[in-house]
Amino acid sequence: MSTLFELLVAWGVLTVALIVLLIYRGTLTMREDDQLFLGESESHMAREQMEIMNRVNKLAPFVKILGTASAVLILTIAGVAIYQGLQQAQ
Image (tube, rainbow, N blue to C red):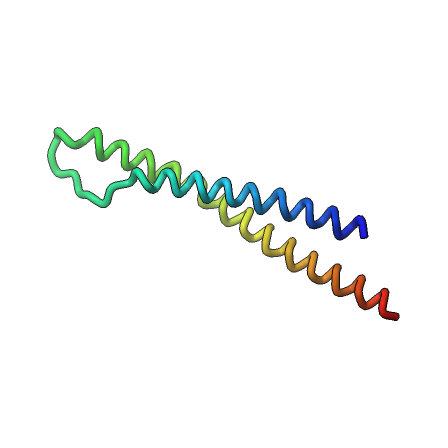
């Protein structure tokens, strides 16, 4: 039973980290504008938008890795739980 508990704790930690990253990405994209800056006076706004998009793009691999790891871990937990249930039924 301790193996299942350890897997659940690991999954919880991964999932919390994923949620924190998703919230952070959401706060970054809230400040993003869907505008086209044509004049020189708006060039600083265009730079700010590029910085925001660079941050979002840097987060993308981490979100994918944590999301995949969380999904694989929850499937592993389900497999272990089923296996342990079958072992106890015998």
